[in-house]
Length: 601
Image 1 (cartoon, rainbow, N blue to C red):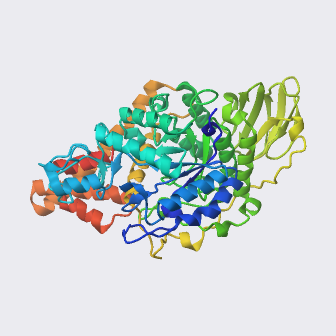
Image 2 (image 1 turned 90 degrees about the horizontal axis):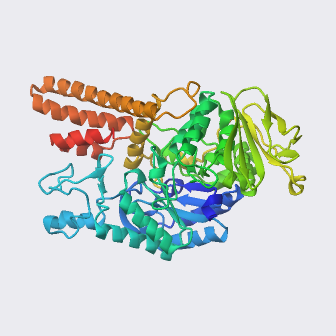
């Protein structure tokens, strides 16, 4: 049993929360990180015992185009600030994991700058993938290279280069010795080289007992990444999607089917792997925004805290704040918040009160961390399962209907159960319990032992209204000017859109309760065909249009490709003048085609 087996995470995107400028001017240090100190007590108060915070290191803009892996972003402070912050978290019993952005660097990274200066003579020319001195790019470097997501702002590292591998491994050692961190979340883990990840796991085993590696993976067979040789966990995007759409569609079959599918990979409960569960993060819309019926905030979070896996709360969502992906800005997903605006939220905000209560129940109920999963009842609007561990059984019930519902469910060896959230006591009769599940709510039924007979419970309320967002967070940064979407959020928006396309082809969970690899493969094929045909249609249309106006087919094709790229960019976020110029300055046909294809991978 490791610390992460019982972890409840809080997730902070620091550049957003602290209102840092969108662009790094490199003209000095601003000690913003100390402003997170009051949040440490809040994190503890709502029952979280681990913090995922990042990106943190020096970068050009959004944090994922790293300039220096060994220096805290100057918009946040210096290395002393980070060391002090981690210690304050540890003093409160909170573990800390950081973003490890090792798939790519920014163009200001020392190795890439050396290539620009020395070209073929650079000793770092093999640090990046497919550097071609016979090509060019939109920056007119006089060479081309592989990137991430179609953006040459993010230069793809050659993870098979031993020097790169050693440099990153030494960076992890530095972070542990300098800041005493407890683990890493690996950005874009689904495109990292597997041998590279094995090297990272070897370093994790070396630097600190129970050093945790968690990877950002969208979908696929999670056991490819989660095993003894690579990572401890990955982001559970399939359950993320099921949790909100299963409620919006009044379809608990989707959630139950997803859990069966995860169990089929090799077990996501008991002694199996534990995935990183979440209902929102810095790349997707807030859960309160996504829910059609805001009262479903309660059953969604009950499931987040009780289904197999490691639960995580994204900063601000415990207040039920809104956050919507917009055409010209993703800033509302990463707002600046002032904790003073949420004073006494655990007492006065129904959403915060619920999250804090769930944190307390989770920390006091080992069955929810270690127990196996058994489905007890499944209908479109009602769902029940048990988590069983060490001879005890905890029963979870949820209801997405507007009416109360009575359920009769098999129980464990206890003679009496108590609702951990609402306090109702029920007796086991003939091996079963009969429970009333309140409308748009749920309950966690735990065996009524002597120690919890007089347990003091909080009064939970229906959640119907969004939480307050401070004035400072209304798309404004430190300069007070309205912020625009960053490139990385645009990229993730593209990936999220691709994921949504795929979901349109998933079978109804009322029609099939078992996973079918053939259907899954067909869905992927159909989704990919639809995306490709959509892009091809757009390219042909744009090319023909521009060709007619110029009277030159070749110029029309180039112009059509450029317009198609801009159209996709605009769909996923704000397009700056620089980004637009980068597209128009690229007149290389093959480069433009590869750029378009990168959006649909």
